[in-house]
Length: 86
Image (cartoon, rainbow, N blue to C red):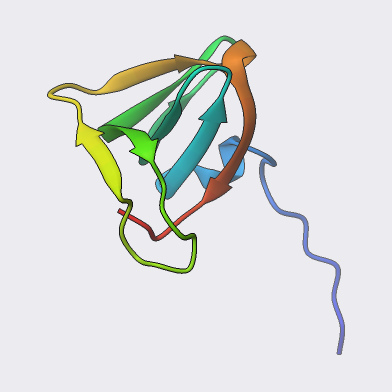
């Protein structure tokens, strides 16, 4: 039997608790998405990705860990995705 299932949230809200990749105006960020509101998102274990390398490889060529959780303005996010790349 097929049933209609409604999911709570869409977009960034749906990715809460997941490792995400944020393509922003100036930088690329990755980390565990632990907060979302109307103006910003919060990343835990955040990194700035200076060089992605091939997307079919499990590790970024150059991703620098930040020593703090990182807030990113949603107005700067151009696209985003769930990722298993570190």
